[in-house]
Length: 544
Image (cartoon, rainbow, N blue to C red):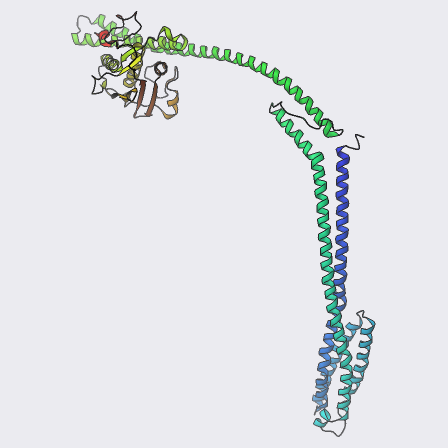
């Protein structure tokens, strides 16, 4: 029972049916073509040669009386010889046409007319070849002689059956042509009907194959694709069939159940693998940070210590010979290096605190005059780098109040100003602008230094990252990372515009303080307010 319903048997029956259909269609086409071929052969082998032969006979026999007249009128032996040659040529042509006509099969009526024509024509030829009677003039021989009258009567007797035969042949040929057209039309109609019937049968066979074989296979293929894409919520049809498709459907059902179990196991393994990857990434990150820190610290701390040691040795060896100005200059160098190390340590500690520690331990916000912090940071930078050219905003008296941690904001400004001076040429101008726009305080710091390559601008705020064009210039790679962390902590934003070789523009936006916040606290030193909630710094006091 299962074998009788198998796909192989079904396809074999369909292909056998199509094969028989092709044979039937070909046989019908051949039969229709044979009808057309028979009609065409009748025209080609009978009526066309008959018409051609009768046409030649009519033409040649029509010319024969003229040749006879020339013979009767011949006045000299040469004229008679010419006329006789002309009649001989016409006799050969007429004999050829008669032979061609006799080789063609004709009906009895046609054969009777042709035999009558030949009999009468032979009589006419015997009369026409006699020539003029003795003793008659040329004009009399051609027009009045009894021979001419007898020849004319014989010619008319021969022309009558030839004309009747020609008309009968033309009528029969026309009818054969019409029969051929009719046979062609009928054959074409039969072929068209056969093709339409064959098309309908092919469509029926195609629909059967599509419904019983193709569509179930496509459905199973779609199920397999969904299973391959880990989609297990599918319905498998055809599991109750008793053929190969039923076997495939039951196999797909087993695959689906196995895929569901596999997906559950994979999910468990994926969670475990994700946990392992997170742990591995943390370990790799810690290892990378440790290596970067050791490399950075060994370089950044060694350079200022060497400078401090060199200036200290010079102070010891030349203490009695130094002028006050030289002593002050070397002391400033030493202090600048100490401040550089202090800023480096603050950046490292501040960055670690903001990233790894609870924010409420280090973030103590209050209302702060950001313009005052900016002024103090500029003053400090001038003390550290006397040759720096820093242009502050003209309106330095109008306060710009923000709500934030003064210590962190001061460290933010110090890093931005230090970078602007450090990456600018000797004495390069650093332009600063500060204003309030809507409910934000906007500060921009522009330098005309080395700039940042376009491909590296997205990474300048990453921790320990330094640009490819900063070789030979000291730095730890944590300053801008700390700046971004402090800005995010204060719910602000920072943007960068830079052109390599022409300078950079950092634009800082912080929310302006609202009226319901704490009262403004300014002018306190970090030491004088160390135990309070707001650390508002006066860097001028520190410098003094």
